[in-house]
Picture 1 (cartoon, one colour):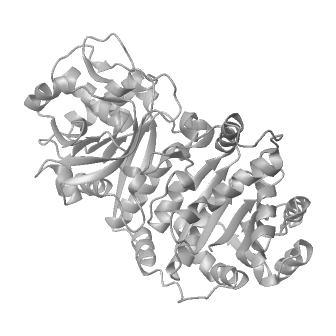
Picture 2 (tube, rainbow, N blue to C red):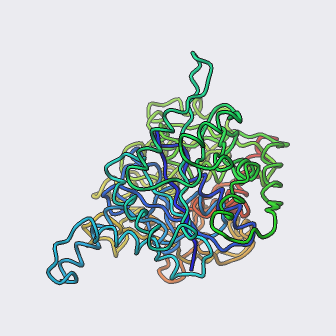
Picture 3 (cartoon, rainbow, N blue to C red):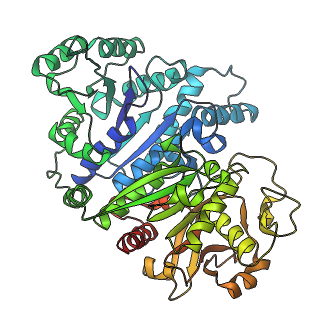
Length: 535
C-alpha cells in the first residue's frame, strides 16, 4: 500500500504549497521512491478551463486532455514526469460525481450528505492514483487556507483517512507563515499558532511545520513553535525566501525534510539525494555567459502566473544556453496605438502568447509585422501562431480583411477558422481540442532540426485552426507548414525559412518543458536571440 502525505496551508494563501510539495517529491524521487503529487482545489468549478487567467493563473493541460491547476506544471517540471486527469480534483468534480450517482440511484434511497458521501468520494479520489501505478508515496496538496469553509470537507476526509490507514501511513505537513515585523524587529509565531489551532479544530494534528519566512529561524523560535504547536523540535522546518523556486529542493534537503518524512512514515532512507543534474542546472542558471531581452506580447501580463509555464520554459532554455533571459512583458493592447518600433526596440526576440477573444489581437499582429520585417527572432504559440498567419496573409498575400472567424465570423478571408468538430459544440467546459496529439515534421525544417526528429507529440488547447484552403498561397509566398497532424492534416507549425527565426506553433510547447528536459523549440528560440544580440 502507498504511503500518503497531505500538505495544508495556513495564515495566508500563495505561500507555495505546490513548490514545497514538488521539492519534497523531488528529494524522495532522488532517494529511489516512485512518487506522484495531486492537487485538490476547493472551488466549485469542475475544472479551471473556463476561468479567466486573472482569476487563477494559467490553465495547465495534461497529455490526457485534463485542464488543471497551474501547480501541476510545477509537479511536472520538478519530477520530469507527466501528470494526468487524476492528479487534479475540484470540489465541483466531487459534487458532480456524487450527484450523478444519486440520480442513478446508487445510494439506495439514502439521504446524501457531506459526511459520508462527499468525504467518501474525496477519499476515493485520493486513492485513485494508487490504482494507476505502483506508487510508494502519494503527496496530496489541499488548496486554499485552513479556516476556509470550502476546505472543510477535504480536511474531514483527511482526518478520516488517518483513522482508516493509520498514522504510520499518513502524514500531514502544514505550511505556514512566520511574518517579520520591521517595527518590532522580530519574527512573530502567533499567526502560526492560531493556524495550527484552527487545524486542530478539525481533528488534525500536523506532524511537520514548514515555515515560510524572510529571516532565518533561531533555535529558540523553533523550540517555541514546537512547544505551542505540539510538534517535535526537528519537525519545524525553515522555508526561507529563495532567489528562485529551483533552490527550494536544496533548501529542503539542508533542513532534512525528506529524512524526517521517511522516519515518520517508517520507510527506508535509501541513498542520499545527489541531485547532480539539478545542481548542474542551477550552476548554469546562476552563471550565465550571455544575456538577452525577450518581449512577451500578451493580454494578461498584469498577472505573471497567467503565463507561468512560458516564464519557466525560458528559465530552462536560458540555463540550457548558459544565458540570462530577461522577459519584458508587453501588453498587446498598448501596441494598437502605434509607436510599435519604439516599444519593441532593444529586444532580441519576441514571443506572442496564447489567449482567447478579440481584445489585443491587432496589437499582436502589429508586433509580428515589425519583427518579420526587421528580421528579429519570433516565436508564436497558439493564438500567437494564428496572428502570425493573419499578419502574413494581410501584408504579404494582400488579403485585405483576413482574420480569424473568432474575431469576425463574416470575414471574406477566414484564414483561421473554427475546427469542423467544434461547429456544433455549445458547452464551453472541457470541449476544446485538448491533450497530446502527434505532429509530423518536414525534414530539414527549423522545427525538425530543433527537435532532432521528425515526429513529436505536443499538447493542445484550442478551438480554431489554420484554414487549409490557404495553404498553397502561403507556401508560394514564403510561409511553409513544417508540422502537420498525420490524422487530421491540421497545420501545427508554420515557418518562414528566409527569416533568421520565425516559428509559430498551434500547440503549447511550454507545457512540456522541464528542468531536466528543456523544450527544444524554446532552446532553439533562445539560441536565435543570442545570435541576434551578438549581431
